[in-house]
Length: 598
Ligand SMILES: Nc1ncnc2c1ncn2[C@@H]1O[C@H](COP(=O)(O)OP(=O)(O)OP(=O)(O)O)[C@@H](O)[C@H]1O
Ligand SMILES: [Mg+2]
Image (cartoon, rainbow, N blue to C red):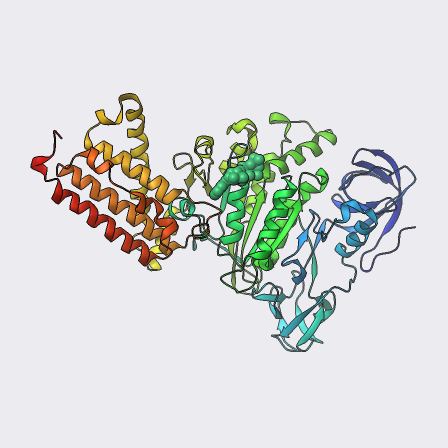
């Protein structure tokens, strides 16, 4: 018989049929759609996908080998829920948010059962956390208000909140000291509140008010921050063919963006890449908190070597974790690599369940599932009255680079930013391979206003000038391919030159460079100004009659290498002054009346 759980009611039944991950059970009363049912001796969890009388069909989240008719089944009495608490920070979890350390429970079903029990909210000893109360007994608190803080939870401002649906008078509030994750720290309205709480992951957590506009998320990646910025609370998708740099870009954002908490959902991608990232994160220190970057990161791993079934849930688990931290007044980034693999899991489910397939075999609900995922991003006033945000960034892997396939096409409709990775740029080793012609940002005006209010009124003009320059260089570049550069008038030759400086000096950014893997906004602005100033000066020289060939022959490597050589905006500006002086000397040495022909 299955042991009874700590806080949930279990009703027992029997497995009657197993077909791959689909398990039919009988004898469970009171089941509801989407409830979690545990099947077999190892209590493999699964989700109710159909009910008829006392028969229910359960979609198991794990490999069902060995499961047979007659095995026990028990309802957990709740839909798929995540155990949310301070233990999440710095942790690695599977798609159902069960801790994954070492070999992981997948290899050891007995351990998996323990973990499943823990995720259902049973008391587990766990490490202690330093709790400091912020309220007092007798206070009347509403849902979302703070009872106290937890120190050293990843170096972020971790608040213990009154969970949604609970409010009233505070009683028995614990004094400052070490508290275990599942210990009761107070009662509110007579209901116990612990450091950890459970939440059904598919349901968005409530908030007081949704806000629009907002600060940009500084990702440290120039092409993003300068040309296609994403706001805190915004959404972005990264479509790109095989090997174009999706994973590297998302990992760069995980490492460097100025968020409080990062939720990295590795969804159906290679496990070794994720393992490498974890090792790197463990070594990198966070310039903002002084701690390790890993401590403010929650990794949800459902890589390609893990069962497909939990992959569908992993995206929702990630969103629930993000909302949990958002409600504390933190800025959270959810990175999902890759939403296409998630959509494939949806497709597999629906076909097994006998749903009518729509486009390319995806279920008819694909668009609404994608919309609902991106909808969980946003900047809000949380129940406690403070502001928090969730930014969602999802990779999309269109098969064969076909951008019209359903996942890519729908995603483009729901996101505020699109960072399209270009195969030709990636082949040319121009990384990040974000295409300036094929990407968009719907929040540029909002970000421009924010910069104007925050000491950088030139941001909007700089972006417009740079975009214009890149577009002009592309256009003229096509002509040059037909006619040869030397056949072009000097003005167009200068456009090609400036385009090259912008591409190599600004947009290219190596993820493995010690100086340049991260670029702060001030240095990014200075680098753009450097390229624009040099481009302008070249054009001016050409206008004054200096030969285009002579200008092109100049050594522009200081401009191209500035991103590596100049670590501060001041150094970039000093470099700019030197370069401009050299160009001016050119005008003096090659006076217009002596220049040949042009
Ligand atoms: N910013 C960057 N700096 C340096 N190298 C990069 C950068 N981005 C990508 N690369 C190179 O491109 C390779 C492929 O990148 P990545 O694995 O991110 O592609 P992907 O789009 O995720 O591929 P897949 O479709 O297989 O998941 C990396 O191994 C790396 O060598
Ligand atoms: Mg990848």
